[in-house]
Image (cartoon, rainbow, N blue to C red; front, side, top):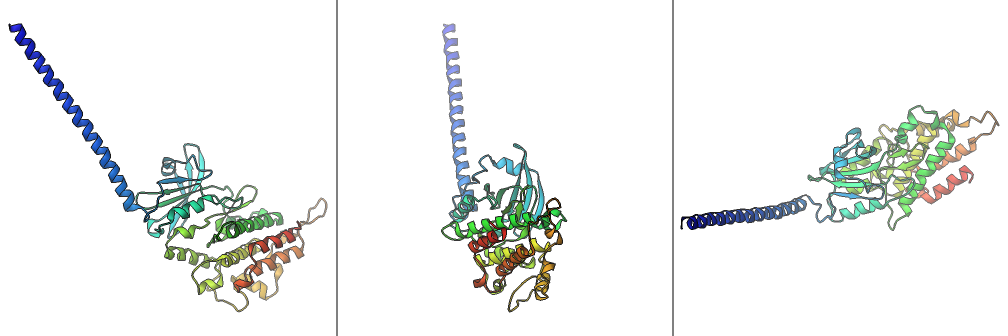
Length: 362
């Protein structure tokens, strides 16, 4: 009898224990499921709060050549600041997982536009592929609205450094023609390769990157499309201080195909002269609008001041020269046509390419 009572007691206690455990397990899984649901709701609320007014861009979008990028690669990469402005910072970063170097352009949240078709702009910039344009590999949106654009890194740096670092390669006619022709081809693709022209808006030698064979790549294509109008205007003003701003932009605010052509003409003059086109206290002229040193050379008819003497050096073995003074004059005249004070008188990209082919002798 006592044994039976003990057995009933044990069974009762065991059943109670199992019941308690079962209840605890059920409560645990219920709370865990509820927590996940609340977390998902919080993420949705956060994305809605920081989103760009209906933008469907995810945290990281990758394009051709950037499929292996991850957020961890970008955020953990040690970076070196190589350029800074009011609207962002450019870093040279080492992605440690695959030991590759990339350029990361960080855009400040207060300077970036918030438009309904923001994702369309990113998709447009991500699909731009041309042998003379820097491709966008990835685009990241941070939790506070900051934006990060990922580009390839080019070991020779930018054209401005190449022209003014005393490198003899910058005086060689073959390099000058290769760089000029490449920039013209890239610009032609932007202006004519799409249903609507893509205006660069900030073309200058600092935005031309070079590879080991001195092939040029135009960077920052369409960057102004991601900025607020005020930030975009600041970018234009910075270009003006460096000598690249077309005269009509004093009265109008929007860059155009013609203002890109003007900037390209200044780059041609830079390549020819090896000098920096800084224009102190610019004032428009009735005939042309050029940085001071270029203006003086043209007014005084000192065309020989516009190119480096090494350009005319001939090959000592066979006496052949790659360039003549006539070629240099034609190149100079093309640059001047691009820098015409009247936008309607400037050649378009197709005409520029034809003229360069004539100079090269293709």
